[in-house]
Image 1 (cartoon, rainbow, N blue to C red):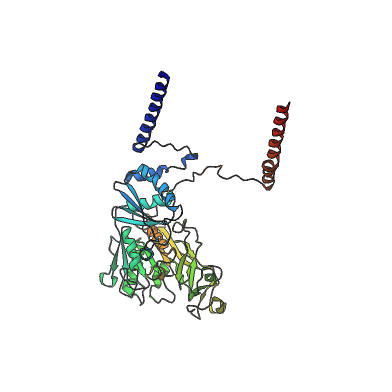
Image 2: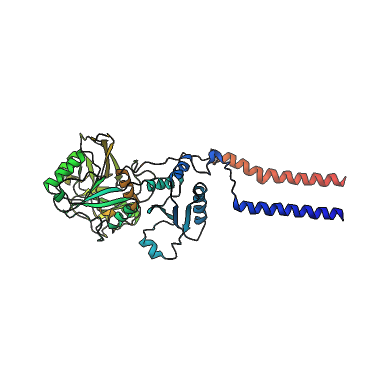
Length: 448
């Protein structure tokens, strides 16, 4: 009786300890990352960034219920929640209301919308570097002022017409960028608090006084984004000469568009980008309807780098303007007419030391297409992402949190074909023979 009573008390004691441990595990977390170089935890720069965020962060993920994507996203965000408990994650099923998702601009399963202090930014790539950089940009409190030149038929920044930029400017507003009109013909001068001036495809010649002020603005160290179009007669030749570039005649056509299912050869799709801070890690395909090719002039005072380039099957068509549905093989390049074979540069990023007292880097971007940011084409591929990157770079918001590669050095096992054959022989022949021999030996030993 004494022994049974003792065993019963012991069993109850073990169960009580197990129940207490289970209860405490729901109240307290103790975790240790023993992976190589702590690759399963956040980097030091990400942890330091989270310490500077003094308000809650909400992450809305548009991930389907099917598959394991939601669990992957939850595990990834949990790394941040362990450091910042007021970071919340919420899932929305994109299959429940596809029309609403398309209207919201959701194009990738698992796309995340990150909110902080009334601002938000979209994220399509699940990585610590990209996620932390979004938080870094949202943490910058100062509102940026972007002035859009108006008065000569430019694309309207607040407009809802197909050719206007209202949807993209709305995206900028969510990121703390305020768009304002710039009627230079009336004001005569770019305001001093302007962070960036945008020239979005003027349809008429810009007055001489306005063109002169734009040149002076750049000479004073201002940031500029210039969106061009084929055959645009805008009277901004002095500005182009100051920047050391010019637009080639004609419209770029690209025979490589058939690989993307494009029926119009004047639509240029780009999936590979020249190396630059704007295009770093950009894996989305961008679409440019009837872009103009750009050329660099000799003797430029700027450091000029291409950020968009067409394929080798492209050229600047100066005669026949392709129509929708027309096959690219019906158009031929005519070198005698000044048509140049690709690859052709469609956009330049220009930098130089600013003449301002701070001597910081002055930045200008010239893109041979403005239609890609319009309400009609903004939702195609990576157009929105590329446009946001251009504005981030021009506004100086391209400072990145760099997370070093902390992958384990032994994650890949490389074996030659001879080694694979040897392993197969060991597991399929040698080991079965040894097991059979051991069985026979044991049987023989017992018989004796």
